[in-house]
Amino acid sequence: MKYSSLVDIYEKIEATSKRLEKTYYISELLKKTVEKDIPTIMLLIRGRLFPDWNKSKIGVASKLVLKAINTSSGAGISTIETMWKEIGDLGLVAEKVISNKSQSTLFSQDLSVEKMFSNLRKLVTMEGSGSVDRKTQLIAELLSSAKPKEAKYIVRTVLEDLRVGIGDGTMRDAITWAFLPVKVDFDFEKISIEVDREEYNNSANIVQSAYDKSNDFSRVAIAAKKGVSELEKISLIPGNPIKVMLAQKVLSIDEGFERVGEPAMIEYKYDGFRMQIHKFSEQIKILTRRLEDITKQFPEVVAYVKNHVEGKSFIIDCEAVGFDSKTEKYLVFQHISQRIRRKYDIENLAKKLPVELNVFDVLFYNGENLLDTPLVKRRALLEKIVREEKFKIIVSKKIVTSNKSDALKFYEDSVSKGNEGVMLKSLNSPYKPGSRVGFMVKLKSSMDTLDLVIVGAEWGEGKRSGWLTSFTLACIDDNGNFLEIGKVGTGVKEKAEEGLSFGELTEMLKPHIKQEKGREVVIKPEIVLEIKFEEIQASPTYSSGYALRFPRVIQARDDRMPEECSTLEMVQKEFEGQKKQ
Ligand code: AMP
Image (tube, protein in one colour):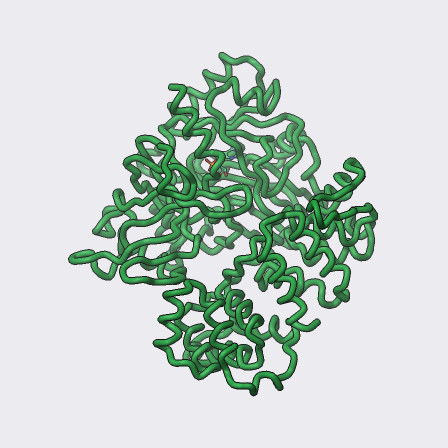
């Protein structure tokens, strides 16, 4: 397929904010795409090079792209920089610069989707000396044979910032419209569809379920093109990460019961970090909730799983909690977060900051997919296969009850042991990867915090020069837009020994800088911070419509994806909750 055909679709999708219209364009594109191109198209349509379960990044800095635009167009670096400052999007800059170029491009060859894709993938593997030059050269080559609009999307794809806003739901629906045997009439005038709802939901559910198991829309689309029976053959594969199920928040035991039903399974909510652990062909793989592989950082956990969990192949869902080996007291997440990042001296750190693995779910066992098996049965299996040993591996502590006072007592027990609160879970619920569907809810004890994404900052002055300071924070709305909710500097330390420092945070943010204007820096939403605050106020200053009073940084949540940050709905709920108190 010609890259220009894909670019036409990008343009149409970018021009509308209507989900149904976007779905229509992608479904039409899919219908036209030959099978061999489907995997590539499914990725490139969202500006990606790898399926969701693969965390490889292109990781090319804006400065390098700027040089590539300069090489391919002959426009001066300072001219490009000035335009970038004015327009704020290097993609648009590339489009403009290339369209000013001499006639010669008119005779250049058509760029194909395959070439574009394979060249971009090369960028990911280029390492070592001279790699910056080779990367610049490669991008410049692509841009040289590109038409202006193509240049815009090449640059945005390289910078992993496509800006067309396509969510998982849109992808699922586009595959359903394109390939499932359900009639969908899209009305362009009214931007609405006419369908038999029940039939449609059934079809969409089949696609969703295949995606839940594979975490890979390319694989799902190819199977869907072949037919429903192929889709239904898609199963979990231990070793391939799947998204973790997320929890909604409740403010009381009553609300918890209301949400998950009675009786409910109630468990301690441990304050550690999530580990999805796979066993396959005698191998153990540990993933964070961002699905990053942290197996190497946790050799002792690998040993616990090998020695204490029975089974040839499985996927288990767990929370790793730190404890002090001398006092045998559990520690909050903050203490052990460095274990996720540390790449050297791992054995020593493991001794200094040991973790206990609390297993709370099993999703796959000895060849069998358990996602649709009711929680009570999954739990019963878990209790059979895990041989518990305190401070190594245990099954999460639980009760099953519909009695409010028992539930409250259990909650108080949990908090008194230093846990965050409790989780309430529906007894008969399936496991829904990636969703906050309300099959499990969390009830926390402490004053609330929000997990917010950094989208901007300011370069410091005086003794803080060279550091990013005053961080602009954002929450996320239903459409995946990041909305600003305030600025924070308090809580970040000047000295690294005292906790999360400006220096450390600056290093974390630098690769994600999108644009700079004077001291102001725009940052790609990547880094999540846990923020404490006194109060939420309604405010016209920020795009969320809210502002935080006295925000304070508690810690970086390296284990969280930006899309997993606090939602606008949570902020609204918190705001309403305050008014009631
Ligand atoms: P939160 O991080 O506040 O959204 O709360 C949900 C997180 O609590 C999950 O992602 C897990 O990492 C953690 N967690 C701790 N204990 C449990 C448990 N017993 N069941 C499920 N999740 C738990």
